[in-house]
Length: 241
Image (cartoon, rainbow, N blue to C red; front, side):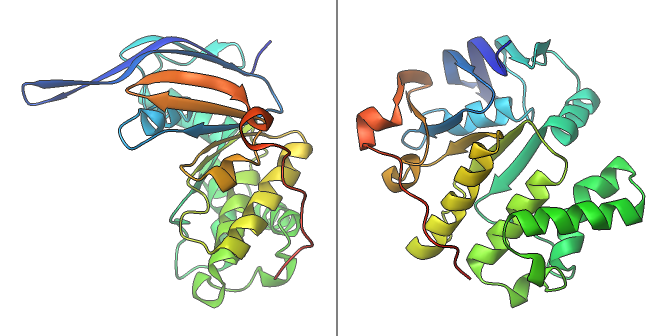
């Protein structure tokens, strides 16, 4: 059974009297353990597709099955449950709470699950260790570099043991060195079996994926192995600070 199966996804927004078709019949399949980059110009539909895959929105028509469950018609509370159980999010802006420590930021999804505080601390510490920040768990975001803040965000996405990590322009606010460290981290997690779906407009970031989905005007223009477009996947570098 494929992890994700989308068939004929259409998403239409109504802005006053204007009708905007952000998706125009998108079909795709993603297997567990894949690493997929979604690319396209602004207005291509890639962010709308990511919102539907992340159960942040539902299609106007078409179907989206996640691990065999059709989630395209579910209500808000059920979608929230699925997000918390199966999907981890990484955003361009990190979305960390400034006045809480790295570990407390990572604990947040577990807090919303109602998990006992002691278990939250243990799992958050393990997640920080997986992204190379075991020695930063008591630091606040202002005490961390941009790359370290994004690794905290990745640890927060990881802490619930999700089936999928959705990363929306995860290196957009980082310099080239920090960007590579983040992509090395995501690549290692992918090697450990986590499915990675990332939205990016940068070819240097898309090269880390197995597949490149190019979108234009709400449709998939191409779906090809990354190696066909960019050559070999970049080799991991030595761990940085």
